[in-house]
Image 1 (tube, rainbow, N blue to C red):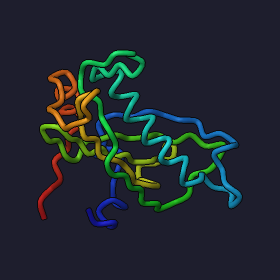
Image 2: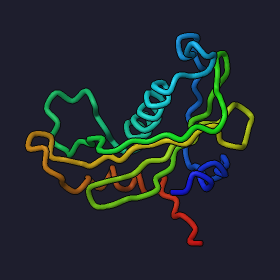
Image 3: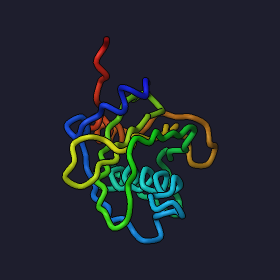
Image 4: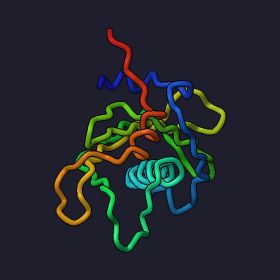
Length: 154
């Protein structure tokens, strides 16, 4: 995906939002949110959605359904976020396969339509014990389909 395409993202291009009040500890020595916090927030919005809409049960001591393992991650930064602001985390799915999904998260300053950063990661669903790729369950797929946004062909 071109950085210019990502930089042009707007709120309307995301399907699910989760607000997050930035904390003092999120800032780095330069006065803006540290890059590691972006990864934490990407993981948080994805897993919140999976728990609320896809049947994920992360505290199940004996999981029988496939689990998602992160196999790739990324983030592109366009403008600074800083404490004490609120960031709206926009979530969409850009690729949806039989056993994998690629999430995209847009970071929006509260009340702003243009994106400050775009990041995400790819999950591959695997058998919880064997750790071999396997198809995701129907409830997971149906929840993720609601987030899928097909990229316009240029």
